[in-house]
Amino acid sequence: MEGQEINSHDKAFAIIPKVGGILSIIGCVLILRDVFLKVKKHKTIPLTAKIMTLITVANLFIAFWENFLSTWMVPKDSGAFMASGNVRTCNLQAFISVLMYMIVETAYTMLSALYYITVVRRDWTTQRTRSLTVVFSFLGLPIIIGLSTAVPLLAAHQYNFDGLYSCNIAAYPLHCWHNNVPCTRAPNASYIRGWLYIYVLACFAFIIIFLSVLMYNVKKQEAELAKQSSCDYLQGIRGQGGLSNPIVGSCWRYLTVFFIPNLALMIWGVIDISGINLSDTILAGDLLTICT
Image 1 (tube, rainbow, N blue to C red):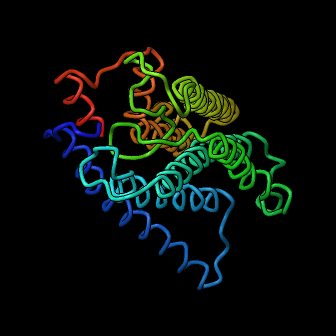
Image 2: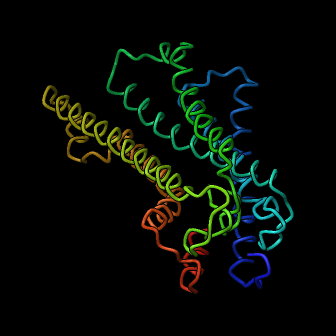
């Protein structure tokens, strides 16, 4: 991109994520403040809340390092708008982004699995979820998966400016694969990104499966209770349908909370896996601006 004129789309890519990053930082800080106050008052923090805290911390890192800093971390010679960094800052930004994204996607999946287990498996008491083994399994696995992904990619020099607003898994020079130019770094970056996008889609699929089975079991339990009792209250619940149960409502909210933030990532993943290069068209710039 060096030597090219910076257009309005490039400026939008650099500025818009900063606004979204600031809003995300504020939201994450408020959530963490609530957790801190509970800890300060010596209140018991359930495992589900601990997983959500891990997700919030990861989102806070993403909001600051990737979205707010955006092109400030990109090497100056990249030609990106407001680029002020170097190779080291680029590697740092991409490393944190990949690490935190993997933690978030895995933690969301683990949380849905925990929610399913604690509701369907009645032998899973609150006391059992406090054991060190269970806590490490649900909190440690996302971190282990994140590190096992981000560290090898850093060692393999897979982190470069991705042409949008930050450094990520990308080949260098930019678009070398599409322009039939030899890639001096990360020639297989597009394939690696493709596998990571597939991982995100797989996490979403697992979440849908866990919560769907959970809702099925809740509905089944409702039906069995309604058959065993002639209580007007239970008959009323049965007549209102599944949405009357707070667990079913929580499942739908959980799916929404996971799906909306990942919508742009999924759309871009499908485009990237398909090998479509949209950066040379005005329509592409408009689409990416909306997704950003």
